[in-house]
Image (cartoon, rainbow, N blue to C red; front, top):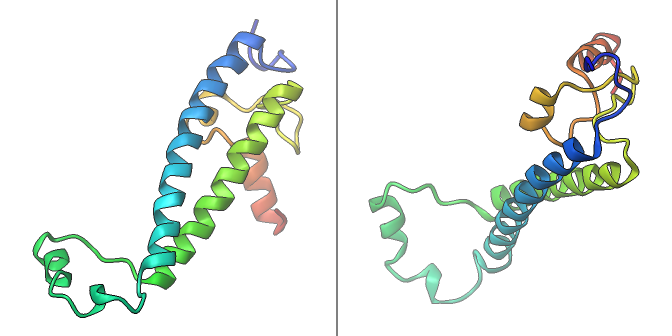
Length: 133
């Protein structure tokens, strides 16, 4: 059966996407928690501010996040987590992978890259041209 003719993904296909999303969700939550720790504990009035350990960040070639940058990244990560969780709900409802504008199936290749997508590329471009989202 061609994907263009299907109205929804099969239970087996939905199970495949569930695994992808749950894996991404776990990683996203881990990263979110790390960013929250930076926001909560970075820049406190403890000895970290005056100790020479800050030099090791530069010596290691790593970039140190400011509290503000970490906060912005945490907010983006939280939104990503919400989008992934919403995708899991769509899987439960068996509406996952259906474009919310055209009603067509979003190609598997797109969903594997952007598993929380709710639009086909065609619909996304159409909305961008019209200035709507």
